[in-house]
Amino acid sequence: MNIMNLSAINGLESVSRYEKTSNPLQPETRAERTNSFDALLNSAMGMITETNDYSNKAEEEKIKFATGESDNLHDLMIAQQKASISLQYTAAVKNTVVEAYKTIMNMQF
Image 1 (cartoon, rainbow, N blue to C red):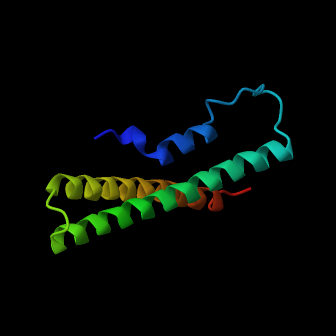
Image 2 (cartoon, rainbow, N blue to C red):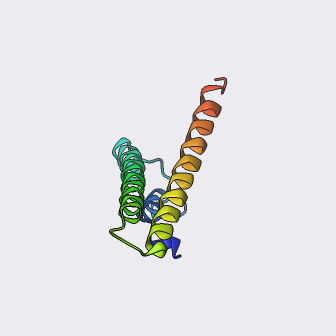
């Protein structure tokens, strides 16, 4: 199974701190920070949508297999694995974001 087909992984590359082409010594403008945050939010929403799509596809395949419309067990297992991996990845990203938020909120200024 090729996990590079998960568009959520590709979507998060655009907000990587290593791909920044501007001078790191110059402060970012407010618009650049807003665009970066906007890209991060759009990527997260896309990941949630994709996870839902994979889950719905797995449910459809399960119903088709149970009703006898499909006798291909491979398609069912592939759809279930894609849904499972996508859900695990989404949960891992969510947990990381929550931990980062908690760390920021516990900082003393």
